[in-house]
Image 1 (tube, rainbow, N blue to C red):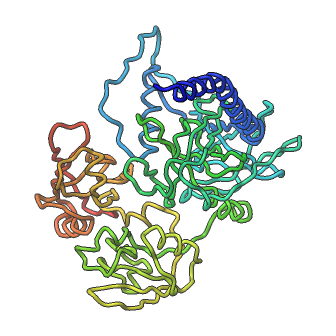
Image 2: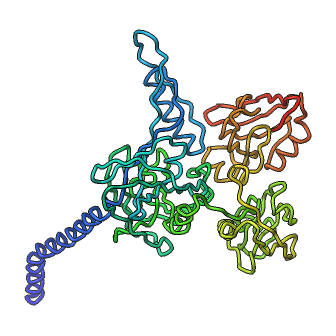
Image 3: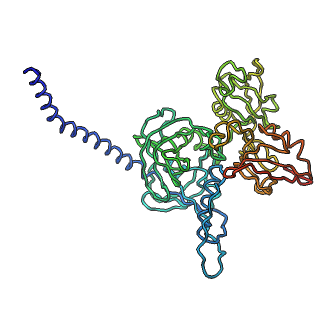
Length: 492
């Protein structure tokens, strides 16, 4: 190495040694700024977040602490629309004297945030549903009993109200339409009853909808924000915030046994729904009466011109769509001249209209475009009937999708329908059918769609006769065959 190179190398090394502490100091300074910003977010958001305790209406019998644990698990899996997996049931510790006693009223715990200075609080509908007594605890420890102002099961939002003796801080609402994947996200609430907990993460996805592992039974609008900020049981109803301390979502769901997977309702749904709940106590929406999927899934098989539109795979009997002549296999491409991009787009457009409004639909059918005029009805209170169709043999079903086949670990090519809901006092429940069962045969005939299922039932399930049902149940090593006895006179 010549003299000039040696001098240059020596100077470079000396500079590196001198600059290393400076770089470390600069890095520490940046980290401290970020840390301080997070601390300030906590100070800003924490006072607007409340803890909500709900006492349910119905006491439950119990035989020991094992029963209480199993009851909690059953509630969890029922909330997420899944049958409880097979598992050993803990046995109660033997106690002297009578074992049968009554639990206190079951208590649910969740979170919420203060919407206005009048004491209106936003939370999830599932947090306060069927509650008899609702108690709200503020950040300063003060506790107030709350009344229900309005509920909207379709968006899983609810508004409750307290009459506080103090001036209430109010949450600042952001705009979820401007969110981008990668933004910071802060979940605030009472996970497992631990009040005032903050967890930091990012927005990891947007527009999460009807995926099999996050579907909640009564919710229609599932345009979720996905985040890796830790969300646990008890966070439901609390805010998901950005780094400015603005609410960008309402924490609603997790995927059990998965890491860093939480979901929140976009705050723009709050902007849309909450003022109506405060004014009227409920939200009234237009109703078409179809089950739909994204047209892109069927583009090749149905010979569609492009990926746009909502593909109709079921029409509810007697609903406005049926009256207007909408048919299975139709693709709805426009509403009142506005393009429909996908199934979610159609759902939101129809829901933004009122009962009695007329919707002019552009429909693609058998290679041709036609227009149909539909007079919308009011979306039924029974969401399951509206989305899944009427009860058949005491149960409501939905198509077996490829996503469901994968998530349930079924063999590729499995055909059938999923039991989405079972009427507690119906024929199916009495015969041992549970939500999550996959019916593959009925009356010894294969089932490949809800339409096929109902057609076979109409032909074979005659009053006074028994019908064989073959199904797949998670946790069972082989298909199960059950016999359903149709009563002589059945209203189901």
